[in-house]
Length: 264
Length: 257
Image 1 (cartoon, chains in turn yellow, orange):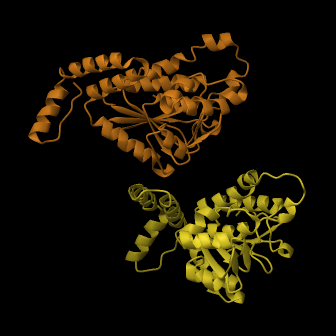
Image 2 (cartoon, chains in turn cyan, brown):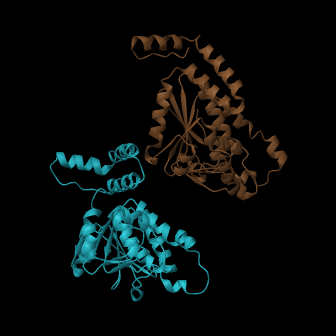
Image 3 (cartoon, one colour):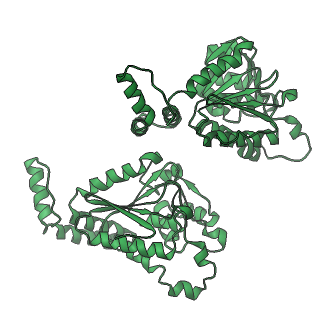
C-alpha cells in the first residue's frame, strides 16, 4: 500500500485493514485548530482512496476524545466568519465521514464536546469508554450545534432529547449515552482500544463494498420518501449483487466453508 | 466504422456512443465534434436503430470545449470554422437522444447534454457553464437551453457565476430526468432507450418534433403544428396495428411504417 502519511496533529496507524486515526493535541484535550482541520481532511482523503483501508477507527490521545474548536484561535481580536470557518474546516470532514464507503468507528476515550462531540456522532458506530462524556456545549457560548450536530443528534436520540441536550449543554455520561442511543457500546476504559480494534478488524474482513452500499442507502434514505428509498435500495442491491464478495459468499455457502471477503 | 475519439456500440434497436478522450475529460475539440455528428447522422439514417444514448467516462461526460483550440482564435476564425453548424445538425436529428452523464458536464459538455432530448444523471454529475471565468460566455446554446430548462433566475446565476450544479440540484431544477447511482446510469439509460425503441418509430419521431417545436413557436402555432402531425399519424400502418392490438388486448408489433 501507499505509505500511510503522517501528520502534525493526527497520529495514524495501519494494521489488518484498519486505519487508526488518533487526534493528537492531548494538552488541549485534542481541540481542533487550523492544522488539525487540514490534517483530518487529508487523512480522510487518503483513507477514502486507499483500497487496503477497509475500516477506520477515530480516537483521541490522552484524557479527551476531542474538545471541539480551539477557542484560543478565536481570541485574536480579528473578526472571524464562523460560517466560512465551518464551510472550510469542519463541513468537509463531516461530509467525508458520512460518505466514505467504509465503516467508521469512533472510539470515544474521554470528553467529546462541541464539534468534538459531533465529530463522534458523524461516525457510523460509537464505542465509548466508561470515562467518556458527551457535551453539546454550544449553547453555553450562545451558539448552535454545528459540524452536523443538528443533523445527527436528533436522528440518533430523537428530537425531544436533542433539544434537551442542545439547550442545557448538559454533560451526558457514557452510561446515559448508551441508554439514549448516542453510543453503541460502553466498555471499561482500559478495554476501549482493544474492543474497538476487535470490532474494526472484524469489519475490515467483511464485504466492504456491501458495507459501503449499505451506508449510501442509509444516508440516502434519511432524506428520501419511502418510495424513493425503495428504488434506491433496488439500485444498491443491483450493484451489490455484482460484487466479487457476494459471489464468494454464495460459493462459500454451498461449499459449506466460511467466506473470504476481499472488499470488492 | 471506427472513430479516433468515440466508441459506438449497438444493442439491438439502440446504439450507445461513448465519448472516448478520457485523458482530457472528453474535451470537445473539432475532430471529436466532427466524428460525433457523423456517427449520430449515420445512426439516424439506420432503420434498425430507434434510440441513441450519448455518454462519456465515469469522470466526465464532457468537460467543455477544447480551450487550447480557442486560445489563439479570432472572431473570424470562430465564424468561419463551421464550429456551430455541427450543433445544428445534432439538433435536427429525428431519433431520440439520451445523455447518460457521470462526472463533469461543463461548458460545451453541459450544452451537449442539454442538446440531447433527455438526461439521466449519476450522483457524481456536475453541470455548469463556466465560460464566464475565462472571459467568454456559452456559445453553443447554453444561454438559451439552460434558460428554457431551469428558468431565467437560475440560468442567470449559473451562467454569470460559472458555478457547478450538483446532480441533486439539477434534479430539483428539472435539468435532468432523474438521478441514479453512478454504477447504474448506463443501465438506466439503456432501459429508457429500449422502452422508447419499442414504441412506433414514426410516432416517436413526430412527437419529438412537436415537443421541440414548443421551444420556438407560439402556443397557437405549436398546437396547430401538433394537430397536423397528429393527423399525419393516422396514415401509418403502426397506428392501425396499435389500435387493433389495443382493442384485441394483445401486444402491438410496430413496423415503423
